Image (cartoon, rainbow, N blue to C red; front, side, top):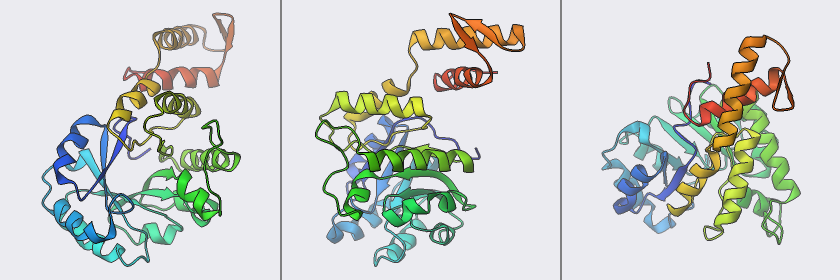
Amino acid sequence: MSWLSPGPAWLFCPADRPERFARAIESSDLAIFDLEDGVAPARRALARAALAALEAPPERFIVRVNPVGSPEHALDREALESCATSVVMLAKTESAAEVASLAPWRVVALCETPVGLSRVEEIAAAPNVVALMWGAEDLAAGLGGTASRGSDGALSDVSRYARARTLLAARVAGVVALDTVHVAFDDEAGLLAEARDAAAMGFDATPCVHPRQVGIVREAYRPTDDELAFARRVLAASADAGGVVRVDDVMVDGPLVAHARRTLRRAGESAG
């Protein structure tokens, strides 16, 4: 993987609210300054000017730009010329050619339309893609639906399909995998469960829509003490045995060793 996620909790911040920039950077693992849906069209010129004036380490933020072909996209690109970031998030990505058109910027491809998600493998393989993300709400709208989740808050079947396909495409291409946002920011239990599931599946991060979600996502991605202890025992036993070995009534082979290494890496420990 040529570009690594700086941590599991990314945070969207409207680019027309410069008074929030410092907090977004300080409180999250990566700030996403938004020029698309988070900003009313009438305020996007203000947002671009705010980004041009931003002084922050380029590794601490990225910028979400409007879709290729939209009236706003060319203006966003002009604003990027005055901005320090080398990584942009492309809203509603629908082809590898769209991603390539943003070179030399590296791209987080946000696949959130039926067309984009039907081409997610092609998009993931574009040379300047460094991460894939999927979007549940835009997908539901694009399909003619009214909700991305059921009445219990769980992702719908089509959302789970898009989620799994995005993760698989990211792993095949060797790029960072981002889960969708949890827009109900008062639903802390739902976010915690969904982010834990994302971490267990193999996602690298869950972007947040509110600062109060950051700590919840970090907790979800952080292995428990028991998980860490088990992972350490697995690696120690497999190093000594050199093959299949029994650890805590579990038969451990190659895949479980890989799980253990990832668990340690999520905790910031060396996995050998």
